[in-house]
Length: 438
Image 1 (spheres, rainbow, N blue to C red):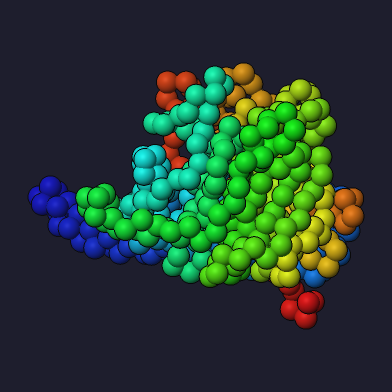
Image 2 (image 1 turned 180 degrees about the vertical axis):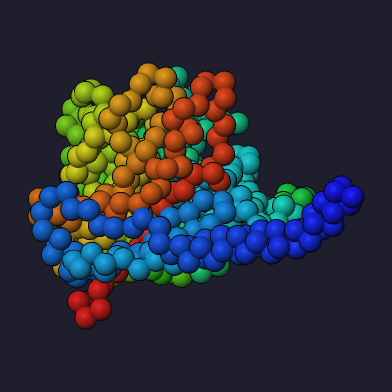
């Protein structure tokens, strides 16, 4: 009898328990939805007066493969508006902070052959989309024995640095070094299905050409191509020429040379002209702001200093009418130097001030075991304002991003996995005029 009564009572208890469970689950979802825009975002002053930010807003995204939080920092007030979006399905993040800027997006480019020269791309959203463009080179490369190279070439930078896109048109120049002689060009790439017969493919034509013959007499002159950038409707060719950083501007429709400007005392490790007063790594970081181009190069001198010292020089050019050098500013900070430090997030030169946003690792407490996992060390997002080469302000956009790195910090050599979708990073950071400031 007691057993029968217990079974009946248990049946009656199931419904209240189910209701309570549903209420608890519902309240959790409501709490998650209520907290979705309450992540940690605040401006933390390091030095100087934040009034230096009065003329600008800084916006961007902090996200991983599952969600992103958009933010906008309103100048000197320090107020930050945020909005969080949760993806319907996880996104595949195939790049990280060490990837050249031009790879970020849906198209992945690569080199596929030299005679004729071929550039391929794949669409990361649709694996069936595979395109190739062909063109014929009008230069030769010599090895150290002055023998012509055919089936292999060396470049100053990876192929991606030679790519630029304006509208739907993709342009390319070969990042040739000082071992090349002849004529290089800026090519309008004509892509066809990559599975087609190359013999049936129309060649991509040169929009403009330029000479590499300064490399004929290596003891007295040289020209090395570092990359190509799209600045509005113009193409900026970036060169190391006779110990100078040179930017040439071309009209993207006619190929006409519109002007050039140079910064002195600039060499890269492969330069062979005399004393290298200032040497920089070739793999620059470029940022476009309307008709302005800012380029950051990392100094090679930091490798001879104490571990953790990084020095970069930023040159800003205006291409609205010819090319004009606006500013040169050198910045220094502490960080790991084992990896290619592509950590600039945004650069803008406005009203005589240089605004720089970059992230870097937090070095405190680092152990030898953790050196292997530098990409996943805790980071800070730093905001700086310079004027005439002097630091006016430095602050930090503080977030809870570093909570993601806790697991990576405790990985062993055998258990570490490189899954970029698991760790939040900053991306798409933009510096703009504050309302009424321009």
